[in-house]
Image (cartoon, rainbow, N blue to C red):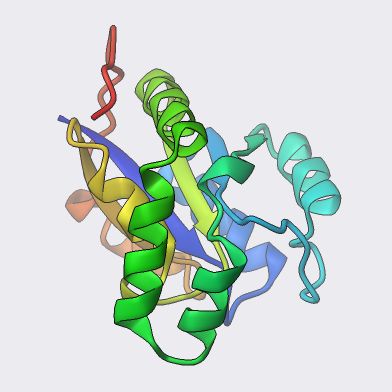
Length: 168
C-alpha cells in the first residue's frame, strides 16, 4: 500500500511548511481548497505555486475537491456533523468523483500531499477525501515543526509508486 500525506497550514509559516514537505519527500502538493486564497503570506495559489516550483515540488489545484460554501460555513460554526454530511454529499458529485480518480493517479505516480488550512485533520475535509482512496495509507503532517520528521524518520511510512492505480 502506498501513502498519501495531508497537511494544513494553520499555525505555521511558509518556511516551516516547505521544510516539512521537503523533509518527508513530498513531490506534489494537491490543494483541495475551494478558494485558494489566504491571508497568510505565501499560501495563496500563485505565491504558493511559485515557491513550490523553486523547491522542486509540483503544485496542483483540485478545486472540485474543495469544500462547498455551506460545508465551510457549517465547519466554521462548529457543526461538524453537518459539515461532514454536506461534504460527503459533495463527494458524490460527478466532478468530485472525477477529481478523486485524478488524485489517485497523481498520488500513485509520486509522493503527494493534500493541502487545506486546518491544522487538525479531524476537522478538515481533506480527511474525508483520503477516506475515498482505499489503495492508500493516510499520513497526516503537521507543518509547525519540520524537525519532528527528521527526529522520527524511521517512523515515517515509505512511499511506494503504484502502476494502474484505480480510485475508489
